Image (cartoon, rainbow, N blue to C red; front, side):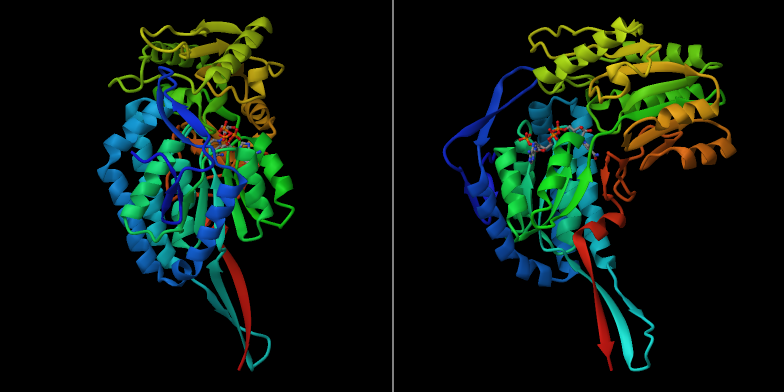
Amino acid sequence: MQDRNLIGSEWISGSGEEIDVTNPATNEKIASVPNGGAAEARRAVTAATEALPEWRSRTAFDRGKILRRIANLMLERQEPLAELMTREQGKPLAEARGEIAYAASFIDWAAEEGKRLDGELLPASAENKRILVMRQPVGVTACITPWNFPSAMIARKLGPALACGCTMVVKPAEQTPLSAIALAEIALEAGLPPGVMNVVTGDAAAIGEELFSNPAVRKVSFTGSTEVGKILIKQSAQNVTRLSLELGGHAPFLVFDDADVKAAVAGAMASKYRNMGQTCVCPNRFYVQQGIYDEFVAGLTAAVEALRIGSGLEEGIEVGPLIDDPAIEKVERHVSDALEKGGKLRTGGKRAKVEGMADRFYMPTIVEDFTPDMTMACEETFGPVSPLRRFRHEDEAVEWANDSPYGLASYFYTRDASRLMRVAERLEYGIVGANDGTPSTAQAPFGGVKQSGIGREGGRYVMHEYTEIKYVSWGL
Ligand code: NAP
């Protein structure tokens, strides 16, 4: 297994210092990776710059063939890649397998979509002129990604960037660099020319600083917290670097009296407890209409209490460890704050002891009667906790749902077709799961409004993020 940084065609070690990668379930050291900084980032940008002219000049068909080979190799190696991901990130193996397939789907989609990039010939205002609009690759790009989806968050950026003819420097999260390095190994094996994809691990602030101060970098795509996203917005002013931002969320989940309660419970389980609640799109606030409240909470409690907690490497486990100690301490703080302020613990509410494992497992939890003054009502908990509140009517539920500085994902369940369209239109979120707890997919636009981000990933929409429009006024 490769554990070095990829710069051009070389696997390099950096300045000598190393960062340990540990299994969050056991604290066992799995590997160490280079603690790169500005110098390594600069070398990677140079490699990406040198690789650009040749890669950009290839046809989209040629680029697409290589991208499809990358996606196919990921699927062929789904099992070892999933195991590696579970070991460094902690998510259950079944979810890690799903993420590898999901990541490959972004690369596969982009391989095809690159062929459909088109331009326009517009009518001019003078007889002897034509207006030509063409789309060209942005150039050298970089991405900075989080630990919660170690493969998919890179693939969602890398696939379209490369399909459009850009080159990329990848800076993965400190906790999960191995999945990124494994993807780079596969890319080389698939025939990607050296320098088109580079990986630098290490000091995030130093690498970020270099990416934004280096004028060769024309675009940075970031997925992570809103807090870091705001720092990057400021840094991007130096060279007016283009930015895509996929930031934090605080998803509301509404269940109306006319909902199919079984489907709502299944949707809630899929969106809330996946990845131990450590996803940007997972519900942070459940608003349930009073007529079906008791039925919904009974169904949800039964499903939550049936979840199997343990090492993600064990088949059948549905809840693994949280990523690190600060993460589990944050969940504990949110739950005790809610209980002090009058919330009622329905189930869970404490750490789970798992024989032979690190003390980093938290019981899937339900807190009833949450109120807006509780920390969990406004900050991302990023853990397996569902806060529930009753509502009386639609206006109240929509108003509460929109009362957030975030606007990434939202969900609601109803069987009334008029309500479905009305509420979908009124929710101030980039993504609405209407009777659907898992809306993310490669061909759909993914992204947030308000402080959840700028830009869209997925589908044909992402291709705008990696292309510039050029207007040629053509005199005949
Ligand atoms: P984070 O702390 O913001 O880190 C994300 C990435 O940014 C990591 O690679 C990190 O590097 C890097 N970073 C940190 N400080 C930096 C700086 N000053 N300059 C440049 N890079 C810097 O977020 P996280 O804790 O990994 O991920 C969880 C957050 O991501 C949550 O808020 C979640 O909602 C959000 N998220 C959003 C989406 C979406 O699509 N909207 C998807 C997934 C996650 P190090 O790891 O080396 O510190």
